[in-house]
Image (cartoon, rainbow, N blue to C red):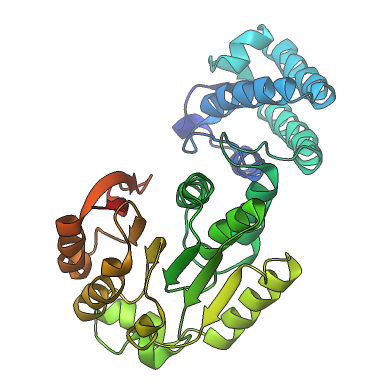
Length: 328
């Protein structure tokens, strides 16, 4: 018996639910921009955009294979394939839909392995490749947008001395190091104690401090050093394993500064006072997690000596999460 599939709530078959979940995961695995997950019709409309992108990238073979499955589904549904790929409603046997989703997902999985994600504008392929590898292998929370902003800033400004306070797993240090390697000059000094005692020296909130007290810093540090060595970045990366307030005296001048250390009121403000004033006029400062109440005093200090360049937002909450500033 055919079922009229008209909304997510109408999809009652367990197999269809599971197939749709896997289908969305396959799209996400292609590392392309897709909307938030929705019903079956939103999936097929998103699939249409994916096929256009694959076609432009020269992936005509997988596009043809996928279209074979879409056209078979359209035939069984008694409509044109354009209706399905346009997000239109259709009537079909759930098992036919499950089979179509599985077959399409299989083709796209193979295509995703063969088709490298194209480098974004202004970011060379070698730099972008390291950003993707860091995303996949290193601990941390640096978003793709932030990584690209950092890389573009380094490529445009060509700073000689870069400093990052708070390396953790290295997700935000690697875009800087990769860009320096592409330029062939400069160094990024990563300041990180990799110590739970230092991480919670001054309190932020109970949940955050409890999490940091249980982190396996040794494992994260080892993974970072392994990654730096394996990707030929050692020439451009310098690590200072110490609390940031003890390392500040090592620098007379900083051309590019990324502050992402402890978010306590004391530590965040201290990092600005000790490091930001060493950035000369025109230098770039990136300040992370500006939506925290505890980082507000540090942000106010930066606003007093810097001009805003950009503010990055959390794509889910819409909150401001990272500020890029230029020293006055």
